[in-house]
Length: 222
Figure 1 (cartoon, one colour):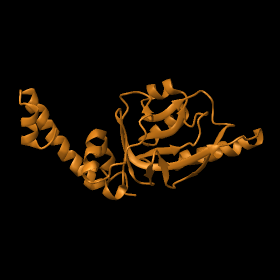
Figure 2 (cartoon, helix red, strand yellow; figure 1 turned 120 degrees about the horizontal axis):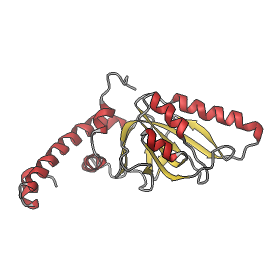
Figure 3 (cartoon, helix red, strand yellow; figure 1 turned 90 degrees about the horizontal axis):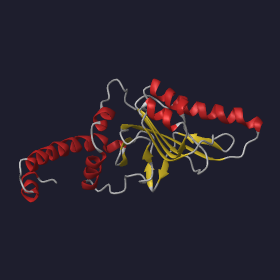
């Protein structure tokens, strides 16, 4: 992966709405790149973009003696997430919290850009105050210990039929979460930036009273 110091892709994607990114990928024939609509931001203002760091977990009924090892494995996963990344976690679980305030604090201090959890978080109010972009399917106060554990990380995961590979680009905002294949990311961001410029021209035109059809015929988008 390119060094965050010289790579502007996450910053460029973070300035783009997910709608523009999906429109471009539709034009490219990539029609199934949006994650399930019930994975939502903890706060509507949250948005982020970064490289996918994939991880998976599973239900687990451990004993008290297992707790230390299970927690150490989870903390090892957190420590492995590099700057400019977005954690994408396939929890495969419906009862426990797979993220929390201290995890968000660690990520923010190490320039991780966000977390997409196909599962739950707790400490939601604290994470919102912290301002760390966190997208989840549900919330619960129940800790993952002794109910759940991380299985592995760095391997492909599939969420809602979308396959996500380590290093793909995650773009997330209030509208939803889009996955851009890494090999196409530069083309997608360039085309989306151009599309956004044309949409801004359309916006200005209709504010001046240009009818929608006339604006479409002039700029080619609406």
